[in-house]
Amino acid sequence: MNSDQMTAKIAAGQGFIAALDQSGGSTPKALRGYGVGDDEWNGDDEMFAQIHAMRSRVITSPCFGSGKVIGAILFEKTMDGDVDGMPTADALKARGIVPFIKVDQGLAEEADGVQLMKPLDKLPALLEKSVGKGMFGTKMRSVIKKANPAGIAAIVAQQFEVGKQILDAGLVPILEPEYDIMALDRAGGEAILLEEIMQQLDAVPEGRKVMLKLSIPVTPGLYAPAIAHPKVLRVVALSGGYSTDQACEHLAKNPGMIASFSRGLLQDLRKDQSDEEFDAALSGAIGRITDASLAG
Image (cartoon, rainbow, N blue to C red; front, side, top):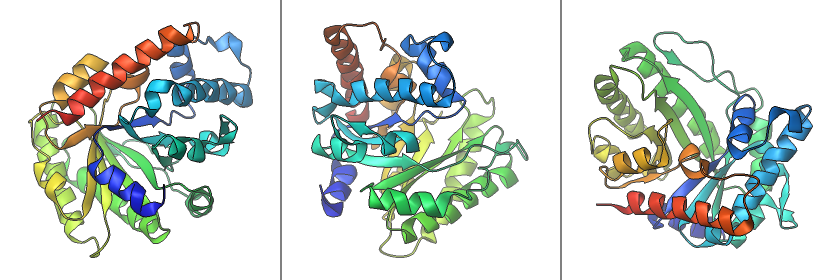
C-alpha cells in the first residue's frame, strides 16, 4: 500500500485499529495475561522477545488479515523486528493493515489533574526511522485524571504541538489524551476536553489531518463534532481497562467512532493455546470489536 491507499483505508475502512504497543512497565502485565510468567524471561531483551513472539502470532493469525483490522499500532522494538521473514510494517501492509508507531516516552508526574507526556527527546530520530521503515502514522498517550480546565487545556495543547512536528515529518499523528474511566467527574471533564480539541483542530493548517484516540465518552455521541471535523482523518476509541464486552457495548453507542483496543483485543489469548484455539479466540474478539465499531 502506498500513502494514498493507506490514507483511504484509515479514512473509510470498515473495521478497527489494533493496539499492539505495550511497552516498558506494561509489558510484564501483558505477558502474564498471555500466560508467560515473570520466571520465563530475564532482562529486557528476553522480555521483549517474548512479547514480540506474541505479537507475531497475532499478526500471522489468518483472522488478523481478514480485512476487519485496518491498522495496527506498534512499539518501536516491534517495528524493528521481523514477522514472517519481513519487517513488521511490510508484513502488516501485505495483509492490508496500515502500520502506526508509538512515539511517546512515558508520562510525567500528575499536575493540575493530568499527566503530560515526558519530554520527547528521541522523537526526531524515531520519526526519521519510522518514515524509512514505511510507517503511516504515530500514536502518543497522555492521561487526564480530573476535570481541571487548566490541566486539560495543557494536555491538549501538548498533543497538538507534538502532532505538528509529526505532520512536518510526513506522518499522521494519533493524538491520545486519554480520560481515566475511573474518574468520577469524567462527564464534565470530557465536555471540557471536547471544547479544547475543537479549538486546536480549527488551528490545524489547511490540507492537514490528524487522528484522535479517546476514551469512550460517558455521554454517547459526545465526540460527533470532532468526528465530523474536516481536519480529522478518524476518531478511534481506547478500551481503557474495560473488558471486551464492556468496551464493545459502550462503543456501539457512539456512531463514527471505531475501536483501537489492546486489552479488549488480546484478553482471551494464551501462549499454551493450540493454533486453532488461538485463532478462534482472536477471531471472536475481532468480530465483536468490528461489529461495535460499525454499529450505528
